[in-house]
Each structure stands twice: as C-alpha cells, then as structure tokens.
Length: 552
Image 1 (cartoon, rainbow, N blue to C red):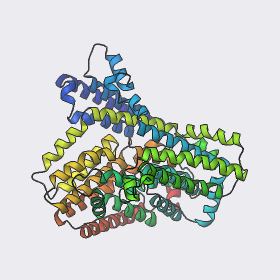
Image 2: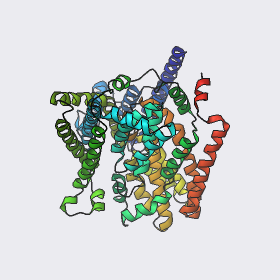
Image 3: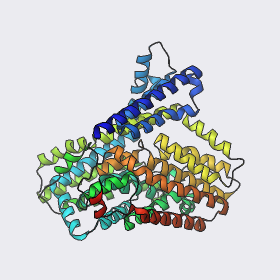
Image 4: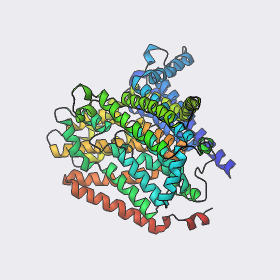
C-alpha cells in the first residue's frame, strides 16, 4: 500500500511539474522579463512550491523548484549563458540578484532569527541533558491527568507567551512536548496548537512585536489606538482561539488531523515513516537534575528576550514600554535574549554541579543540528520571498485591491480578508502583507473611520490566516521545529482547520462590513464556530480510545 501511495504521489508530482513547465513556456512566448513584473506571474513561483510540497510531501525540493521557476522568470529566459545566469540568480552571487539566497543569509534580520534558533536549540539540548525536561514531564504526568488537560495547558502557555511568535513557537514546543507525548497527542496536533497560539495571539496582544509592526504602518492616525480598536474585529484570531478550545473540550477531530490523532492513541505520534526527530526524542531521557533545571532557565530566557526587545526599542534611552515595543527589532532582541539566557544557564548548571563544562559545550552543536531542518527550510522560504518581491507581487496585489474599492464598500472587508489570506499564503509573510494592504485600506476607507477599522482588522486577520496556512511561513516552519513534527505533516493537518475558521471569518466580515458592530459580528462568528464544530462532532467525529481501536 505504501509503495502504491508513493508511486501515485510521484506521478501526480511529475504531472504538476510538467504543467508548471508548460506554464513557464507560455510565459516565455507571451512575456518578457519586464512585462512579468507586477503581474499575476509574480505569485507563480510560490504557488508551484506550495502545491508541489502538499502533493509530494517533500518540502526541500518543492521550495527549490519554486525558486528555480522564479529565477527563470526573473532572468527573462535568456539563452546566452542561461545556466550560469540562473545559477547566479538563485545563489545571489551577482549584484542584480543579490537579494536571493546570499542576501537571505546575510540579511541582519534573518541572521538574528537563525542565531535565535541555534541558541534556543542549544537551550533545549541543555535542559534535556541536565534532566530538566524529564523531571518536568514526570511532574506534569502527576498533575495533568488527561489528553484534554495536556492540550489546554499547551494552549494556555501559548497564550501567556504573547510577546513574539518566533519565541512562542519554540518555547511552547520544548516545554510541552514531554507532556503531550505522555498523553499520546500526535506531534501534528501539538504543532497546530503551537502555531494557532503564535501569530493569532500576537496579533491581538497590545504589547507585542506584531502590535508594533501594525501601528507603524497607519499613517495620519495614532497607530496604537487603531490597533486597539481593531482587536474586536480581528475575527480570524479570536475565532481560532474559540475553535481550539471547542475541539479540545468536545474531543472533535476531522480531516487529516483525525488520522494522526487516532494513530497517536495507538502509540504512533508521527504517523508517517519520515521521522526526522524520532532519534532526538530518544536521547532526551535523563535521570539527572530536577524540574527547576527547566523552569528557571525558561523563565530567565523569557525575561532576557523581553529585555532584549525593549532594549532595541530604546527603553533604556528614555522611551516608555509601548514606544519600546513599537520601535523594537525582534530579531536583534531575541538574539540578545537567547545569548544571555544561555550564559545564565551555563552559570546556573555549574553552580548546581549537574553538568560539566565539556558536557555543556557538547550540547551546543547538538542544538545546532536539531535546528538544521528548520534553518534550511527558512533559507529557502526567505529566498522564495525575495524572488516574489522582485517579480512585483506588491504592485500586483495593490492593483487588485484598488480595483474592488469602488463598488463593493460593504463587502470590501471580506474581500480584503480573502486577498490578505491569499497573499500571505503565497509569500509566507504576514508582515509583508500588512505593509502592502494597510496603507491601501487607509486610503480607500479614509472617509469612513469605522469601516477603516474593520478593513484594517480584515487585513491583519487575512495576513495571519495566510501565514498560518502557508508551508513557507516562518512561524509555520518554527512550529514544526518546536513540536519536532514533520513539516509537511504539520501543514497538511493544519490546513483543514485553518480553512474552516477562515470561511467562518469571511462570513463574519460580511456582517461587520454592513453592521460596523464588533459585538454583533463576533457573536455571529462564535455561534457559527461552536455550533458547526459540535455538529461535526455529532456526525461521528468525536475522538476516543474506542475509535482508535476500531480504526484501520
């Protein structure tokens, strides 16, 4: 059976690649490099990468093929020195293509995220080596007695760590993984809970790096006040939280997630044969240390990261806390925080004499190795985004949005939400989507302040939704890393849930566009989310051990 499935995936992937090649040939015969820029062709490379990854279940080659197709479009299909030119375009050795792979790896913001990933991976390795993770898992098994309790604890921790989505993804995963494993919760479900409490929580948290990013884009108004007023209209984020609590409490699972959860109840946390983190999990068992060896480093890491972020925002130069977050550089702040966090951990473990200096240093490369898959996917994703930007995706989306503005004012929040979803899904960036859509929304709705608030919230919600779904999104990639889950498994299981909430959110934005009332619209959305989820449960989607025993 597995060989047949593999063969079918291979055939479908080859057919899709063939269709993509045909499309590129059409582009070659009907366009030039100049006419491609700013058109729908700008979204063609990420579309290839995303669809191919979902079909083939292999993310590295899919991203590379997407990059390669973008390089073909960007290079203008020149025959003279084509191979050399495309290679330089992809790798970024030439000045004209300096923003691609080489640019992605030398960009200071991206490098800060990589440093943060490596140091946090080292922190996790240290806590495992010291026995803190095992001690915390033992404590949690005594106090968290059910699968529902373990999932609620994961959600609660994700909500509490609202400062930054990157930090949320990796910290929640490293802390809660022993607990969810104990209660036979699949790695795909853990990855979803992490991802759904990352960006969706940050976008409704007034003190966060996301609030700062949005506030800085609203020209002519008090950006922070606009952000606060938009929170009740941020239906995708709010309804995602409602949906999570509903499916956990009602034990409802559907789509591909149901198969993963049924397998987890039978002892298989991964479902697929590809288990890149299975061996790492077996090395985590240790009898050293106590629970404090995990809790204290995590708390200090959180404090250091918060201090690092407000430091970059000028807090120690006289700025208040809100201004500090508004002006902060999350990449630099998290890198500072993780560096000082790991220095503290070294001193703390040396004082407690639970680890030798040589063992401590040995954990550093182990942490780096654990993060290599995430770093590789991130590098490819950043490269693909660079090519998409160079092909003029921003100009294309701006033209599309302005084309809807005249005749569909009441429906425009829903349209903005859908466009935001599609753009963030294709490009893998919510912040980039903010930067494009929010100024457009402000100019379109400038004469109607209340509708402008709804439109800005629709932009934010759509960007978060697309980012939540996209396999090339930073937070999606880091959620997979935090849960130690196969990345394509995470994407394929999360998509039905995200699309489900997105469909309800789109309807809710239609209500909001005409009523301009957050309470009425939100009540409609909550009733639909809970009611439809319970209906799905009563249709036979309740998850229980008996269902797992009867499953094939």
